[in-house]
Length: 355
Image 1: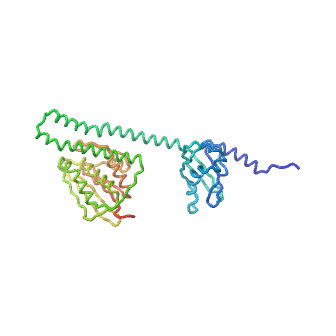
Image 2: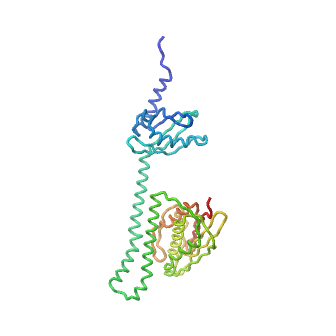
Image 3: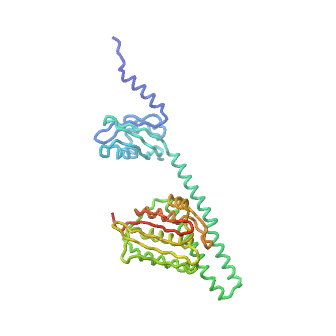
């Protein structure tokens, strides 16, 4: 009697041929006591990472970069696994980023479908860096160059002895204002770059809100005088917030600077704070030129909105972006109430205790 070839062998051959024709990497593992072990991977995966099939089954580096990442998703509380992104170390030492969709079949077989997204992620990162570069060039060309040019003009007048000491004294506040404006712009730019390139984290601590308001007010004394703005605040004594002190200072500084910029000569800026059970609500209110609803929408969606102020002040449009980002990083929220010609109120809520 002629020996018959087992039917499953023909199926195995067909399976290998079909799987190897697929454009996506495929990995199949058996699972024993929560630990996956590779029994099959197709040619696409082998070509991408450089290891042979046998090396993949036994290579510890591959196990570390692949299995240890996916098993945390697969075996969490018995949930049906979903999708994730993982990095896989290749034989040449480089790493590739994969989108992985996987499922556990009959509780013992893990089937993973991978999509190589390394080039896509690199493209997106390059696109992000190009936008960052273009934004910085724009800031340097206009927002920082203009006040420096004005300052240079004032110093040229002084250098040429075209003014008397009394006239120079009159120009000192304007010179200080130009220097402060450049300093604030550079400070915002540096914080913004740091936020764009790094994953900043807030370092919250209990901070006395009134102290922050007092120290911030001192920075703008000359600006208030220059535009004859009446600044006041209603902050209950002993009111503390739980937030990153540096981020909170920069947020208030930007909100006050923004209010000054868009408030007319002789205007009013008022800050008030209310304490609730789990948070403090702070309002920075002015009676300036206001913001359109479209402008509010753009600001709250993280877009940079830059306009010339009532005294031709300029800005990068990054200050409000930073305020929004910093408040969110401190588990807070922000809203804007404004009407064109009627002034604006910037409101942020921030925790007053550790959660």
